[in-house]
Image (tube, rainbow, N blue to C red):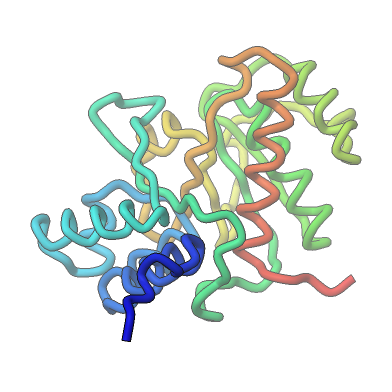
Length: 227
């Protein structure tokens, strides 16, 4: 019987590599954690109880399968964050989804990413969302306001506020800025989404890209929401 290797669909081969990468319980645990939150390798090692050598092997395997990426922190350049790459990757465990609830989104200046995340959260889940910053700007960035309008959202009444002005934090807190995540050193219960700062880029397209990324992260976290 002749070999079938020349007839294998490249897409099929790629999916087989993906499934092989996920066949290990340790790697599956890493992916399930990354469905919720970006993590540093050291954080992942603690969360999935893997030694540094074993974790490095798992991450290399997942990266080769096109499932994860590793990017340098926008805050502390010595840090790297691990995040999922596969758009549309199905949520592999229902327990990784959370029920829509009150949420707080945090970044440094509270002028763009955290404000956009809060507006999206309410629009998608119907639940209240707050945003705050550790060093809030004087006002919302004008390009964030424009991007929100293009996405059918409104930041017209939003104002930057200090994180320490919020008397009681909700159970769900998400940092959307590497700098603030590293400044606060939050507990493992907090989530972190390493979203590039559109203010640094300064172009409208960067703000639109931030909205797209935040929307995907929210929809992955909560799953389908009934209208």
